[in-house]
Length: 429
Image (cartoon, rainbow, N blue to C red; front, side):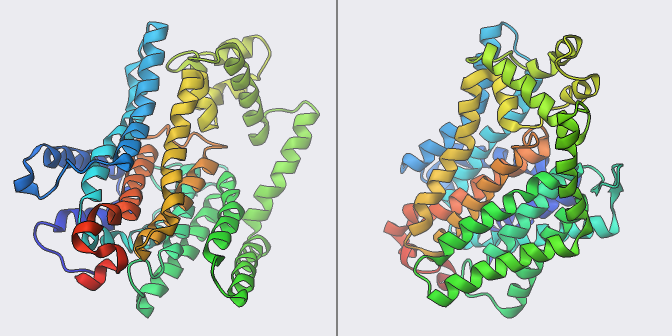
């Protein structure tokens, strides 16, 4: 790890421990992100001579990130004004995106040595997720276990994402020692194991998609042997998970069973309920395409759908909790404007990450790959569950987004002054 001064200790500890603390401590993910935003706002307000942070060198990436972070709040406000009723509680989740903006601005202006403290954070979080399930689990019913305060779906999603980022962080800031490599590889298997234990079926869809993307991106410029061995290794890993895990086989097998039952009129299976909610959501989007129904509109419409016989009472009960699709949830409540705002949360950082895959600094390239993997994973997670309906999950996503975008773009800002664009930042520590 790079040397730490008294001044750099708080951000270093934040970067190292935020993911694992979010999984281990109830409320920590939300509280730490708010605290970081407050500190960042204070630093941004102080004179440059006190902080050594210049806000004058603002560029397009700063603007793009801050605008996309503000879009969900603006969409909620616009829909509330248009419908003449602003549901204040609906601002909670979108505001977490906005809080990530000052954190990003500060981190992007930090020294690379400070950003390097995120190196082991993903591995620690993945290992913590498995440790929670092995030593302090909670039974959520129907054979599903998770942590004491986070349901199996969201817990499994985060664990899987942390496992992927753990192995992709190999040799991130410099060539890792053997012990560090072992920890990061163990993080991959811990994240996979935690996801399998929770039975989080929706997140497993991300595995082949992310695997193909990583193989493609990591194979550019590599030898023919590398291009053969890496895909085979990933395929063997995925096949092994399916062959040796009865949980995975059973969860995938239930999908076809649910679909058959749905076709024969039995709609109150796990998959059938989701399909009913999706049909209801699409009806709402069709009838209210621009601004949706307003805050909590989808939830409040469930009884009317049930009374009309369009969905079953059980599906209506589940729909009062969530739409089980993040995009449909935003579009039913806030219309096409809400959908575009949510899309910006994925696309804008995704484009930044894609463009930074060819950055001059190798650590920035790797941060871009980590970020792209993270965004694609959460987008896929959101196809079967509302990823941003909980304070923890939206805080977790937005905060890690700020860290990873800062990590892949720091060289843009500091290269003219420090020359770090062409060398590993740790070599200068």
